[in-house]
Length: 230
Image 1: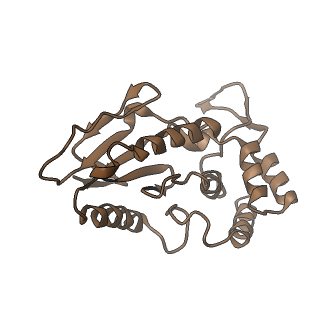
Image 2: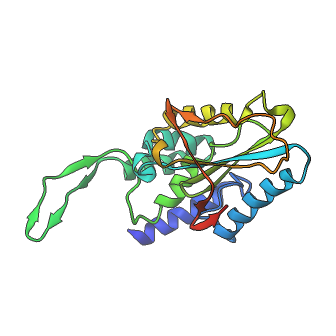
C-alpha cells in the first residue's frame, strides 16, 4: 500500500504548481527548518532596521492538527487546485471509513470507524495536510504567515504610525476564523507571543492579545522549530 501511496504522492506533486504556498517549508524539496527560520529572522530584522518600528510574533499551536482534517473540505480544495476528479474521489475514500482498534497484549478494543484526519505514519498524510492548509495566508501586506508543517508563525510588522490601526490583531482574528472554518483547533494555552521593540521611546504600552476570550501568554524567548529565539 505504501508503494501505491508514493505513486499517488508523486502524481499529486507533479500536478500542483511549484509556486503553491511558498511560505510552507515542510514536505517540499530543497527546503528545511533552516530556511523557515532564516526567512522569519530576515523578515523581522529587515523591518526593525527602519525607524520607529517593532515586530509582534505569534507562535501558533494546534491540537492534533493532522487528526482534525475534514476529508470533504480537503477534497474540495484539491479540486479547486485542479486535481483529477477520480483522484479526489480516491483520496476521499482513502481517508473515510477507516476502522481503528487498540491492542494491548492479548486484549483488543472494539473497532471505531474514523471519518476525519489523516492517519499517522501514512506516506500521503504530510502532503495532504500541506495542501489542506495552503490557503492559510496573510490577509494584510504588513503581516506574514510562515509555516513548517503545523508550526505556524504570524509576523506583524508595525510602525509607530500603524499602532492605532492594529492589522496584526485583525490578522489573528482572520486566522482564528480560518481555523474554525477548517476544523483546526487553535490551542491558545500553548500559543505564545514575542514582541521585539528596540525603540528608545515607546509611545504606548503593548496591549495584550487575546484569542477567543483567552489571553495569550507573552514571552521573552521561544523555541521556534526547536531553535531558541530571544
